[in-house]
Image (tube, rainbow, N blue to C red; front, side, top):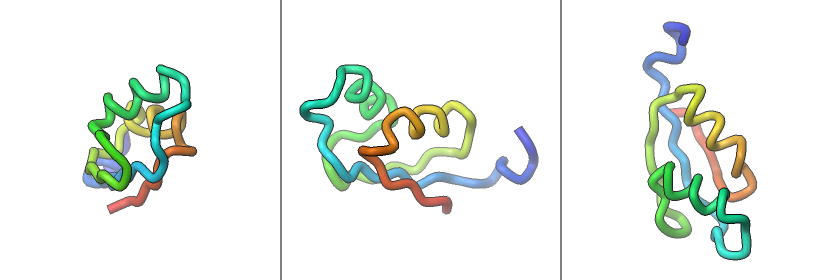
Amino acid sequence: MSKKNKNKMLRITQIKSGIGYKPKAKATLQALGLRKMHHTVVHGDSPQVRGMVRVIDYLLKVEEV
């Protein structure tokens, strides 16, 4: 991980419900710590978090903080 990304944070907000989507999408929401619509969490910018976001980008809004 480069020094540029070390201090970056991602603000992740759930904008759509996980109802009707595959169990993998629901599990990824839970792994990110999102519980309900419009719930926001802040995670460090890492390849693991970016990968989880990429899998369910249609359910999320992501902002760099």
